[in-house]
Image (cartoon, rainbow, N blue to C red):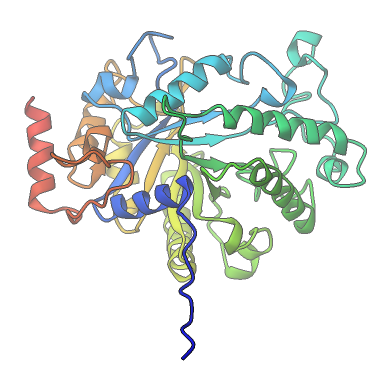
Length: 387
C-alpha cells in the first residue's frame, strides 16, 4: 500500500506572525498610532523617552509611524529632518517595548530632484514627492525608462536600510510597509493623474519584487489610498495590486473640509473597505488620519471614534506633531482632555494594552482572548487611569 507523504507547511515569516497578531488584537479593539512620536512634539525635540501622546495620557501609542523619504538619495536625514540613525534606533526600541511599527516612503522626484535637494537651492515642492509638474515620472522609472537605472539604486537603498532593522539577537523587526499611498489623489508623482493604472501597478510590483528578492519577509504590505467617498469595486480594483501582494487595506483620511462631508465620506469608505477586506481576507486600518491643528477640541471622541467603532479596523494613526502643523495631542492643548477620554475608552488600545498576559513572553504574536468592550478590558483601563 502506498502512503502519501504529508506536505510540510512552510515556516511562518515575521510578516505572517505580525498579521496574526494584528488580527488577534483586532478582536480586543483598535490600536492608537502616531507618526514620528518619539522624535519631537509641540514643545520639545529629541528628548529621551518623550512623547506627546505619553505626556498626555501616560502611555505610548501602540503603533508608531516612520518615513524613509530621503533614504533613496543617500541623505543623512529624512524629509522631516530626522536622522536615519535615530529612525533606525527608535524603530527597534518600539518593537522591543512590544509596539507595532509602520513605515511609509515619500521618495523625491527621480526626474527633477537635484542631487542634494534643498541644499542645491531647490524650493518645495520642486524635486520632492509633491513635484507633479511632469506626468511621465512613473513611466520613466519602469523598465526601458530614462530613470530606470537611477530608481534601481533608490530601491536598493531602501532595502539596505530595511535589512538593518534587527533585534539584538538578529531577528528581523516586523514592519507594516506602506508605499505609494494616497495614489487616488494627484498630489504625489505616483498619483491618479500622473500615471496610468497599469503603470501604477508596475511601480508597485517593481518595488515589492525588489524588496522580496532581498529576503525581506518581515514586511507586511499595506495598500492605502486616500479618503474618497465614492468607492466601488471597479474603481478600487483598477489600481489594487492584487490579493497576493497586499495584506492590509488602509485609508488615509483627514478632515480638510466640513465635518459633515468628512463623516459622510469616511462612513461610505469604511463600509466599502470593510466589506472588501472581509471578502478578501485582508486586515483594515486607518493608516493616516487627523484634523489639522485640532481646531475642534472634541473631534476625536465626537467625530472620529463613533465612526471607527462601527468597523473592524486594526489601528488608526494620527499624523505628526510639528510646531506649525500638528494632528495629535499634547498636554497643554485644549484637546488633551478629549484625548484622555479617548484613551480611557475600553476599545482603544495603547502600548500597555497590547502587552502579554502575566506568565507569557510571546506578546509579539500571542492571541488576546478578551473580546472588545468586555469587563476585563474596562477594569484594565480604569486601573491605568488611577495609577
